[in-house]
Image (tube, rainbow, N blue to C red):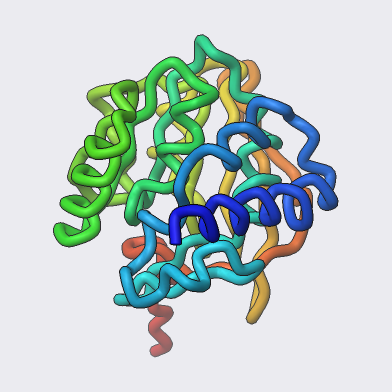
Length: 218
């Protein structure tokens, strides 16, 4: 089975990543190295390298390789960067990003996912990434400011609290839900102001705490 997963991983990079303008060789190598099958529920390992999002349970998703690769590449992560991953899930995005950055903090609010991500990252020897527990929209002030904040899922809007945790020149990326669809949005902080643009369409699910507030009518 190990050989078949290795082949599937190579095919994922060749047919899903390389063909969709993900040209960063470091990122290609990271996604060709990290065993994605270990970051999904055991019963779903056979589809770990499919082109779709994978349901992790509880409304959480492992983003499709294409979506994840394009989002990470858009952040232009350097070996000196400190990165916050919001919505660690099972830890796959943190493991990939850890091969590109100096330090990765992966924030998770779900206890089961927190434990799964911590265990898998340790098992894989990812020693420059740590999983921290907390409310996702609040970010992680203790490690701020960050060069990159990677929101691993969809939101209805980004709270200013997250934007404030970016360094000058820092990048923030997330999936913004627009009606039934999502689009990846990249923001950059400059002169104390964060502004951004949509860069591609994608599918995702709303992360806990980022749901649209209920509107009341009188």
